[in-house]
Length: 335
Length: 301
Image (cartoon, rainbow over all chains, first blue to last red):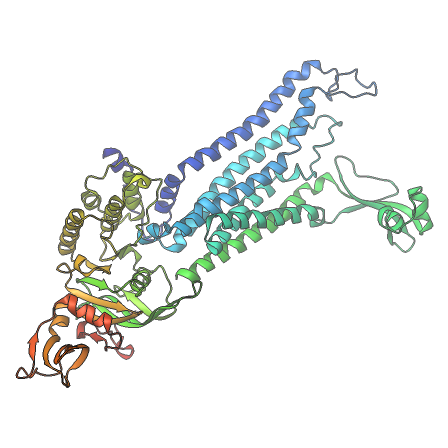
């Protein structure tokens, strides 16, 4: 019994500081899932570190600083297998982060909250001096804190692995704007993870059954993620370049075409091909429609942070709404 | 007047999702503190709903219930509730469950009491491997470990064999007597509670039919045997005739005419069964069980 006594709280907490006990019990309840999450984190770190070690170990076969294994500057480019494999793996890093967020949301919805509501074990906590609000708060605060810490580590590690591959201009799949890369490069990753926690909690208190709550969470998160992903380029105004100019560095090309004298945009795809015209010389077609000068809209590399921060802000606002709604639903039903 | 452990005024609960209509309707009663109260009634009478409302799990559809002078949600730390299905975390061990009780009740937890009630439960066994009776024991240990002022037990002894029932009931009564805990125990088997309880609430069809000190309620009724004739001025609860002989359970209004009737005190079981068989019999609340009227409710809040 002595081990048990040691774990009993030595300092009594006041009635206001009521989250410590519920959080500790929650940790104990889900010890196994916690180990699994930790293992996943280590695995993620291990993959990135392993890839980077592999690339530097294979560097002896490279004849050129950009990773070419053939003579430098001879027109053909052949990277080592380590490089091409690493590029392929890292190009999915953002997708992995989004899937991970979905997994977190589904876990919060099902095993963490809805299962207790379904099986009735929530009443154990509620009769043990824990209010419904504290009970839910513990189930939100603990995953939110763990997920923020874990995803921050993953993002930093991913950025380290990603930047190691950027020395070469011949890497095509690791642009900062690519949908498979972008979410893993910044705070957006944390935004998605926190939104997942919030949506999971909301659908759990609304649906109150384990499997349907998990399904609803996955559905909502998929819709939000795909929706935002499709419109990510609209989250910050693009910069327009004329006469074939383009920004320096790694820019995200959004739109291009020609402008008429009155400033109207003509796009080859919508105005020439879309109008049923048989594809001809693009420039000639657009000129025939009144185009006089080329334009191109870009997100230059400097737009990385504004885009990330706007997207994160949207995700956090959605998460806050979901959390507020979840508390309201719980209060209305249980007083 | 001592404080009320539970006070309900016009309490009603309607389950929207289940389409069952009113589970509890127009309930007004008062349970004085320090009593051991039997909450009896047939299955589906509203006993569990009443307990869940008092424990602050449900928000009433109408009316209000106050527990130890507070709203149920605010009295959480002073009330313990053991639901019928004995909710426990299946993956935790017995020891971890008691540890969780200590964590969740940092101010009131009494490990000795919890250990005593848990008795010889194997401490390293997972809750999911326990038998129904063992789960009951652990749930009671958790409930008593928090040293509640009010203990609500929904069908607490249903899973126990007679020996364990006797033993746990004894432990429960000892704790109650030592700390003057108010206990409410629901059951549809009266014999399970008779003898242990000094207070009675009969719930039937979502209403409180009888409420008050068991002795007083029994003493207010008389079993009359005699010729078939009007029993006025007494209130008839149930009357049966066999040939030229009538047996009637009445609530006395004045002295019984013993020249006509043979009078006897009914047993508690006879009394309850008579009420359950006669849903139209008027309710009886002794003065201590009658809710304070709304106008006089100055002590509250």
